[in-house]
Length: 312
Image 1: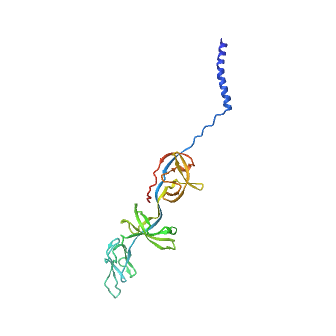
Image 2: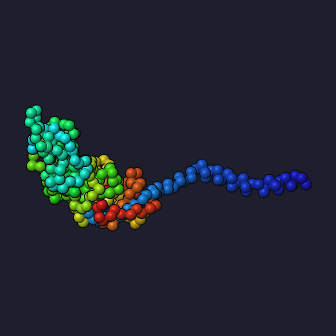
Image 3: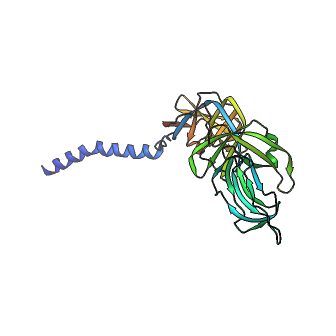
């Protein structure tokens, strides 16, 4: 009885063993297919191509000076016996500035008055009471501080772009949040042979009452304005293997590598002369690792550049 039961169990295991044997043989003869490679999709930020204006400028430094200032002299040699004004005081034409005693040993004369030849503000008093002066010694300096100009020097390599009438923007350390508009009013006809620079004078085109003579100015002279141009942030541009291009998004899922011709670049804004059209979508972040036809996933769409070019 036990022998019959054992034979029966062995008979039941034969089909299972046969299946395992067949799987072993087929597995060794036909290897499993390789895994399917998944296509890489790059996460990117994009920005629309803008149309508008772009300004090119040169940046220089200058000093604020009074448009009209004059030194005041006495009519005679002598000793200064009184000074009747103070620094920063406003004086009218004909007002008494000082008195000079022209007396000499054995000769006594009445003091000579020194009067203001113009109305303005006293910006200099180089002498003191008791000083001995001559007719060539300046007693005071008067300035019309309401009439100011900025004097600067432009390097020789930029002078081809400089001309009377160009607009400019001036900033001062005392007023860091304010921008003062100015315009070129005078250009020197000759270069300084020592500094190889051209003197340029600018006038304020709007009220600048808080600006004082002697202040240091940081100036941006706008040399060129181009309107209705195509522009993008300069960081969108890719330079690789002597090629200049951007990546244009297609169907919101892949990119086209497109060569462009750049123009003016200023303040991280770039003019595109050819290769792009307004409102096309280009890669703004993540483009450094892309290739032509690469698959992308848009994370964020950045706002386009403003049509108006505002110089800060």
